Image (cartoon, rainbow, N blue to C red; front, side, top):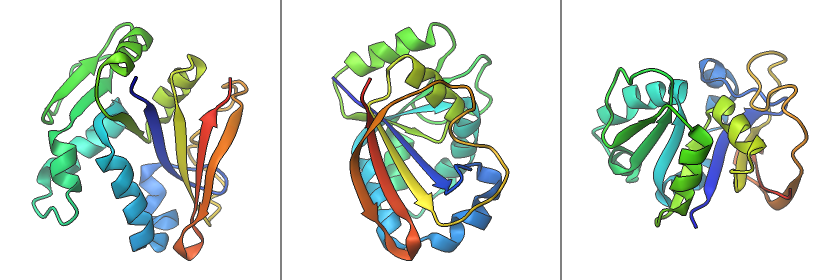
Length: 184
């Protein structure tokens, strides 16, 4: 059975929004951090994304012509499943919209043969899948910055999800990788 792996960069106070990443994530880029992200991407053969994250990535990745680490070609060729209530405006290679019975369709994806299914960002989708018990692992890159306000990765009122620490690894420039698996 395939695993659904969540990957997100966050601040210490849990902010993850793309609009402010230049402030809290960009100062902490390092080869070590990039190697971890690259490894997650290359270990997966499918992306599962919310609509906003899909639109951001569909705009960016098809335009990356230099493929220094194999990420652009890999992302562009892998299957993409987009949870959305509307038709996709941009068509990124191998993209499929999931409009109905989202939990059932995602459960079916997990049963298919293949590598891990990676979710990048997509906090609303992650919240729904977590409540249904469909998330297998969380990979959080915690950046040493506090925003004080902004969009939090984990929504207020989502309910208790108990997690077991799988790995804790300091990365250069004060970034810390935290890998968790749900225990319930």
